[in-house]
Length: 166
Image (cartoon, rainbow, N blue to C red; front, side):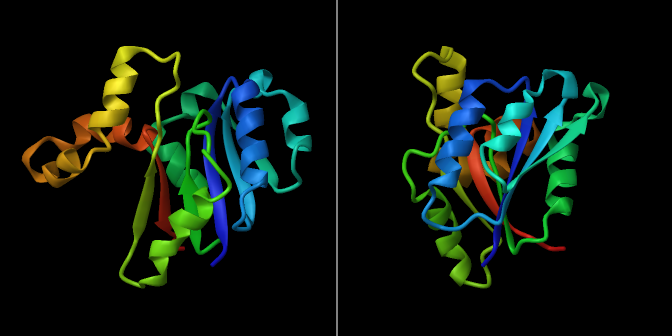
């Protein structure tokens, strides 16, 4: 199955450079990396030279919306699967994409996710949401809480792979 990676980007720094290098080293081939960048003036042009599979689409700040920007990026994908990540989600090793793709051998599977571990220097609230919003107990209790209240945090705490419905 062909895989694209979608990453919303804002004021990229060395973390995005490192992420792109780690994605390039994945043992499962990535068709292309779609960067949905907010504010072109903050995007260092040298990032596009890291890997020829990186495509950058610039948005004005007022065009950015967490769900809408991801939706726009997914619609640009021609791959069977789309992995949505954040710009600071670092693959721990070269098997991230391979592990996210495995469940899709079952045609009934429409999504799979990998948990994003918090950075060592992050705030306590980020550590909590990375743990709480990806725990099995939270997911199983989804029907007993307002899903919208944690959805943005949940997506930002995951690398989520979706079957593309194009």
